[in-house]
Image 1 (cartoon, rainbow, N blue to C red):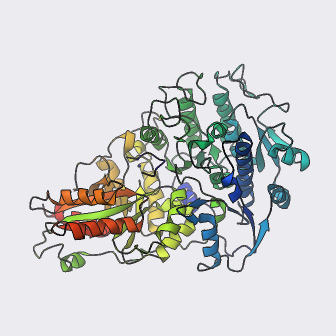
Image 2 (cartoon, rainbow, N blue to C red):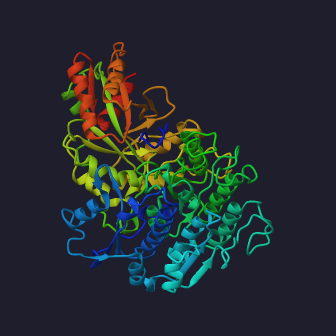
Length: 628
């Protein structure tokens, strides 16, 4: 992905069905939805310590409350997210109450304060989990406990105006779990033994906290082992201005709390200490991450694990985040390489538009069993009629350009981009392959349904990185860190369900990353759910792998003029044969694609360039290379 704040990215069967299903869709809309306006939290001055504290503590409690009360039915909604000039949460609420109609008869009742919200839903809250300001990792443990034990997470504080004072003292919620001693001293110290165990301390309070949590939540069976969440812990409070005001991503916690997921924030690197725990023994963070992944896999072997989140690169573990020697992309790739070996993919809620709200609410949106492609998939007859294929079966000597519209392997990006992009009056001018990973329907189902409903004749839907979730396919079969058996069959079944529901047959970007290039074995699996094509990563050119048409993606420059120049230059190198450019761009508007088209057609009218839909693009590759 290439937003201004995020570096470019080079981006058992029954259990798999349960993962995809997430929540059962409600048969009827909720009678009442309680609405909390959290937008003022975005406007606090994060150069002031008190504003940082208010933001973190309030949003953490709100997200957990959402996750708990929305688990069974959608009843608590936040206004919070704003992106691309759109009040995102308001947009979706208006659509659901208007054109869509799901909430048309639902009564919307405002809630004026956190105190009022807690009082309203108090019968569903068992108490508090109090965590340690001196050990930021305990914030992740608190989110885990919130989901497993219906506890509101709150940071210990002696401030009489704090959220802790509000919930514990004024409202009198009992403490169900202490992650800090009741006098405010640290429970996890990095010395002696790990609390409640005979296990010697690792020497790191951060790592000790996670080792305790593995026993408490995963090995005990409290967590759902098919869900995990990789979001920044309370270390955000030390560097709140390293990203947008909402990039604490606390608003993303609600869905994973509702799913009883295990939360963690650890570095994938073993060759340097993490900036948030610089004195730890080298490699402890990575060892602990592998221990968590192994524990999750052990509770649900051969299932697929959904991990929400992304390496917190603006804050930690990278050159961008402080004392790190690895750039953002290598850190992303190393994290992905590791999780792939445990049958896990991540939904990459990355900077900049990485925050989203209300996923626990939207997860109840009543999806249909099947959403056909809005437009008929073209055939050989269509290509002959258009002059793309001659009577003798030869593909025309032109550069066929297919637009991979990315990167939508993240529900937060999809959630925010669709309202803006699908209102763009230039949409429909150019054939576009919207690379929407179909698993995003778990957290943003209404966004996919909206896109399908509002498609023009030039809007086509394909999967993005690397199908129904972002992982490295080779990591499913070559597993030096996990030593586990192949997960390729489980991954295939996982994808089949999502691809069938959303009528997708193309994977726009099989992102190999640090695991290495996919082999024929992985592509045989992709042929089962993605038979019409795959965009590739390390392949040198378009070709058939078996009978699967493939083509490496090429990132276009951000400038429309420069992108047009890249296209025209490649068109000049055809040498009497058809050429294919699978052009990847990130968070670009339909107007940007229309501008690229205009520049090519008006300023380079002699260039033999044709912009085609993704089904035509890969279909022509099949025709071209089948005749060889």
